[in-house]
Length: 155
Image (tube, rainbow, N blue to C red; front, side, top):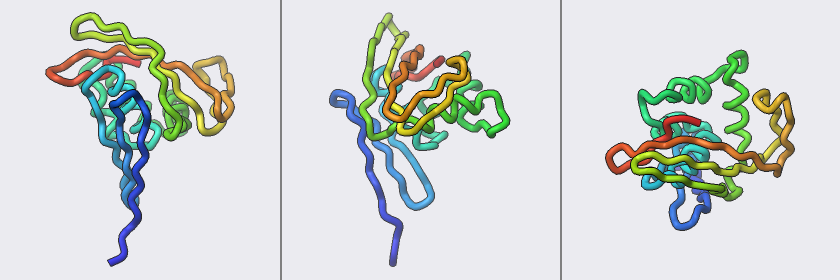
């Protein structure tokens, strides 16, 4: 039997990493929700791969940004949130994601993380600015601890 090859791409973030696996036509990412840092890395890697299910598994259902994030991840080219989807899909999954800052207060956290683009991307949210391949951009998000998992409330 001849099967499609399996690729394993690993993101570097201290000791905790979200692994992305592409099997045949199906793309899935393992998510690590054990800390705010690993959650945002897992979300970013999954979204960059186009794994909507895994990316949404990093988000808190019912939170103030959940529907907006879901709409952006599934946006068609004519949708206003398509620019955010394009930005996430332009992230270089092989480049390290740098955690710029983390502020924890009980079961809440705010994280700023730096992504690197693998290709040029124009971002309407930045006044139509074009970011060149290899350039970086900082994202920020709020997270909440739910049971033993850290989940994104808003980006």
